[in-house]
Length: 392
Image (cartoon, rainbow, N blue to C red; front, side, top):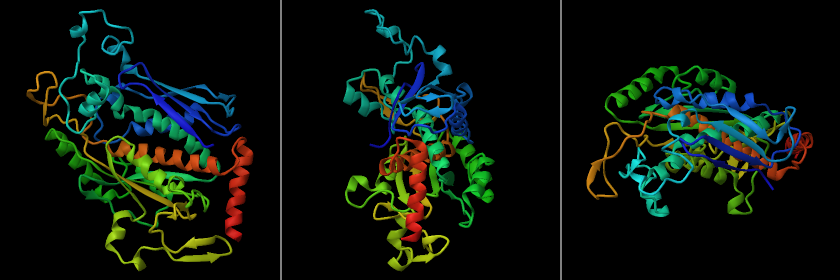
């Protein structure tokens, strides 16, 4: 069995919670490993006021003792600082009969592009706050927390990840393909828009400013690169064991993501096979390797040992300060859609979310494939797999 996690919590509820299961025992883990990643998620040019209100930090409340995992479920809690302003609106206790109309911030106007209307129809909610509180991207906070634990596991077995923005509002970065993961990481951590191409950084920021001034929002494309994955992880024998398929599903599960590519992705449709497939070579030091990496580290649903390259497309955030037209579900009258506090562009933050959902899937694939009750044995097995593949 591999790893799994559940998250719980509403955007303006008391806290966000996640429970992780399946991590090996004896793996070093500290709250700081998680909180560094949560801080990265909150950065980025174009973020809204919520990022000033919430200074996210996770508390480990089970599954870790004296700095090491126990093998039992790990529970993480992130408190919502804004809860104090929402205790009546989002209270747990039942409302007395006749007081329903006194609850403020009721949402009856469905916002285009959100889960509001579909969720209300599905679950029978007349107040669509019951939908938007959980469908909010606030939930990605604890998805990043879960991914941070997975990322720690990966780093301890020699696998490194980096995410960066490759496009915002039609402005494309031109990233030097020879840049190492470390070099991309250094550049993007110092960039307000998490871009590795300094030539387009200001243009992207200007585009975000322009969208904000127009009461609009813009989307973009993010890329995640993972190096160090051993060859042969995943499987070709069933559709649901293909690791690239799992990564695609993980990326598409992020709020507002509408597309995913592995390697050159859709560009492969416009090129002949000779410019798509990666020639295989071997040397004594590296073992088997590909001369190019256009397939993004995957063949047949399995890792090749080359860097894994995954891209995701994020649509513009649908909460607009120049709202689109919609319908009030109570009166059926047309209305300008209601506005919840929001960002004009969350692509830089979404890159961090993408990085962490990819980390989770890679870690899960390793835990499924290799003995994982004890961390030291798990790490040894992965190293043996690398040696075996090199000498095959």
